[in-house]
Image (cartoon, rainbow over all chains, first blue to last red; front, side, top):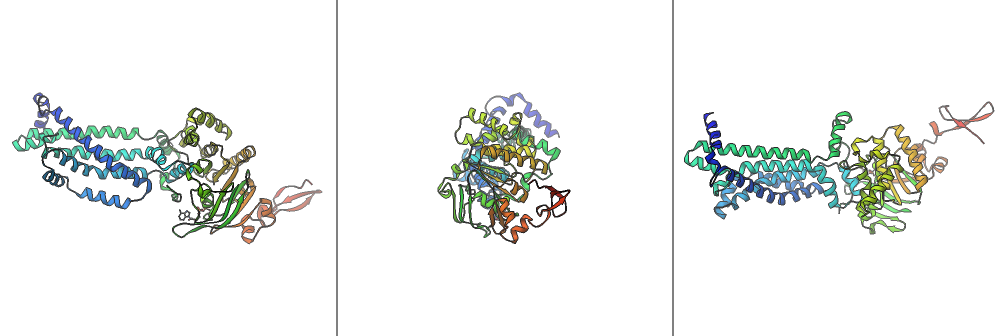
Length: 247
Length: 270
Ligand SMILES: Nc1ncnc2c1ncn2[C@@H]1O[C@H](COP(=O)(O)OP(=O)(O)O)[C@@H](O)[C@H]1O
Ligand SMILES: [Mg+2]
């Protein structure tokens, strides 16, 4: 417990808040690398997951690939890429992108797949093009789940971005590795606590976002649900309609 | 006019949903497809707007094979109303009704003004325009579905068991509304139901389908009752029993029509 207070004291120490390698600078770096990783991983994973969710094709393959990626130990991947690419940010960015892809893929895929097939069928029968179905029906309705995937990916990125400091002078991980080296446990613990706080704050923001993206009409339906609907969600009843000619 | 020429649909899993169907659906009339569940009614209906493509034969609209037309454009010109209303849950009533005109490039102002008029047409209060579908009753949702189907003023209106999920009283009300609307608008309506009473009430032409997607008989309700094509049809329409097997008895000098159970159905006036 003493150690914990030492950590807090280290965080509150004003000398740690100024100069090169200060807490604000490290937090900024940590957020930057997390954001860069999130953007790269999203550009790769969200369209793929969306396509799988929309067409229902390639589901097995993407589950297999995500499973494979999940099984990779991030520290091992990082070391491997660092040996190949050398010291710097490339290796941690690649390792973190690999870490972030599975939850993003799963969220995008599950989000689009969660939309009631009959709603999609009706949209198609009205004359929406496939892109319009994705953009105007599947994405808005599946958005809470898609954001859920982004949320869990972000949480993992922020927690794991500490490893960037393993091969680069970057991020909150610096405090942990530096503290470990010099046996300054207060610094080490202080750095860890900062990572936890940062992760919680960002996660809280996503939790709020996730609520905000629930379409008003769906929220209204949830309110009616409490009064009059059967307990099973509508998507879970009835034979899904699968005929049709998605082009 | 919609014409089916030797149309067959076999799904990839081998199910033959529609087999060798020849039928003409005359313009400005209501054709009702009726049959038990799984008899291929929905499949037949969805071949008109290319939600399903036939594996054999042709579907023609005004002499043009639908297979030669872009499915998206085709669908935007055909109204479609389905059982669960198929409304987009995240869009307000008015947005749902205006969806297809907006897709077709109609101006916003015009599309919304017209959508409000359509709410009048289907007997909905304009105050419902800003509600979400989940905030409406089942009957109201179906009316919105009909308004949406009419939004582009299509020549053809496809309706797949549109009143199947509402209670009998509301259903009767909606059926009367549809008759009124059809009297005013004169669309080419293709209506699917498994309820023979609904078919006889709404249909100018009634198409009786049996398992395997074959047509047993296509004729006006009166013709079907007078000359059922076979035992299946006779049995399906119940021509020889219950409230359809009427006979006349004389009561105090007047001819009273009585059904098979002896319940009076009315009086012969001529
Ligand atoms: N996409 C599909 N794949 C395989 N079989 C189907 C498909 N859609 C419908 N069917 C089958 O085709 C037959 C006719 O279905 P349908 O047209 O929906 O009948 P109805 O509307 O009269 O109940 C049924 O046996 C049904 O199971
Ligand atoms: Mg059906």
